[in-house]
Image (cartoon, rainbow, N blue to C red; front, top):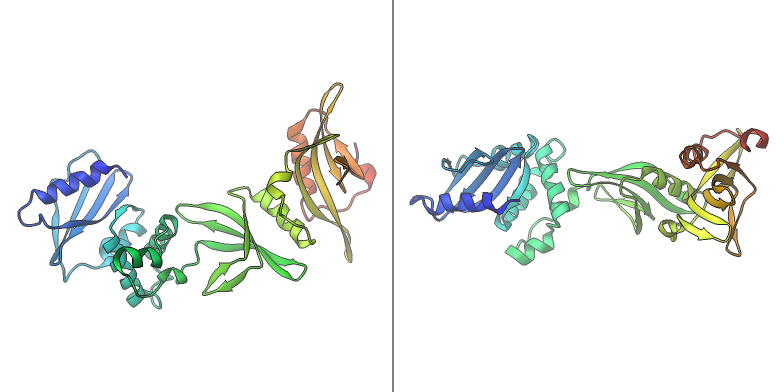
Length: 314
């Protein structure tokens, strides 16, 4: 947040005889709109103005009239984002949510969810509040799902694995969780692999897990150079033979250097032997890397039907 906004509000408060002892509780911003609340022990005041203007005017709110639903959560629900919030306000919010919202309004209050997202993004935890303001009550983050939802689930041997999507105001990424479980309505895992927004690679790696593969080197194997070429991408597909059987195949997009230039190929049943890439057969695309990548993605589709080799090879 631009500190000038906070300074402008603080100057207005300090120069007012009636409200000079108020402290800013929070500042919310939506595009050019600024909304802020400050308080002392007896009253609240609110500012509502546009960026570029000075916060000359404010309105008082009686302590009896103030509530987080109307003056905080409602604004988050309308698209305002938290630009500043004091530790005391966090303390009061956590206490209020723990006492009033956990079992009644959690699922239907988008504003509360937006606040949870902010706490997750800003690392506001029970331990943080305990150290800053002696908070000793409910850990409300135990009731937050962290914006996670399942994309795919399965097992690597007997170990549960999941591909999940995290989508909040502040973060959008895909994660593979190894040995996951559900606790307090939340997905947790023993070990995780993080793919940012690369859902294609996440799907490829998840398919590899389902056939017993390992992801230890997943972010170092791509773009790795061997004696006879460089692996651009690699993955695993389940090739359907018929309704009752299927075959697991390792697939790689490979770049090779020939006398005439680059040659990109999609290789099937690949393996590494003595620092050399070996494969059963491949489709060659010359220097057309874009088409090779499209074909590689198509091959990795789990529903890719079996074809005769003559139909695939080029």
